[in-house]
Picture 1 (cartoon, rainbow, N blue to C red):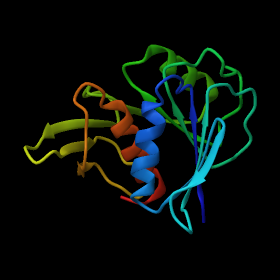
Picture 2 (tube, helix red, strand yellow):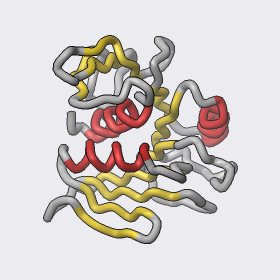
Picture 3 (cartoon, helix red, strand yellow):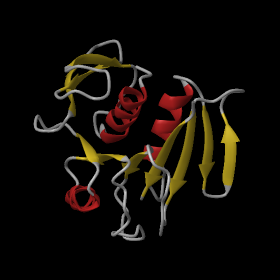
Picture 4 (cartoon, helix red, strand yellow):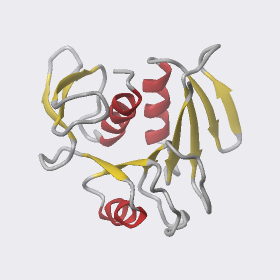
Length: 169
């Protein structure tokens, strides 16, 4: 069964989209619709990924919605109660947006109050993600993240949350 991921508000350099596509490609493959590009990373992809700078309506129950920073062109009153929303816990706009839609929210940041955070860095280029609350079948614990950028951890944490929510980690 294909898992649908909708990335909203990742405009400009598309760092968030690139990292989620990379992580999903390495864990089941992805069919990606990103603006004017549609491509797949494997013959039988597990993930269907849409990256949207603007969005006025969404009806894909059971989807994972990942919020970026540019939410100004995303309609604020959509009913996403049947979706799970991943947010950057340090981005107030995404927290306000997620609170208004009524579904489950997974906060990701370097802060200890979010569901998923980083508990440490290893010398071999990996980081340790700490899951503080249950996600899907995964209990709180620590999980190795294979690549990271210390200056911008949200894309890596969001990708890790997508894998946890999809049962692919």
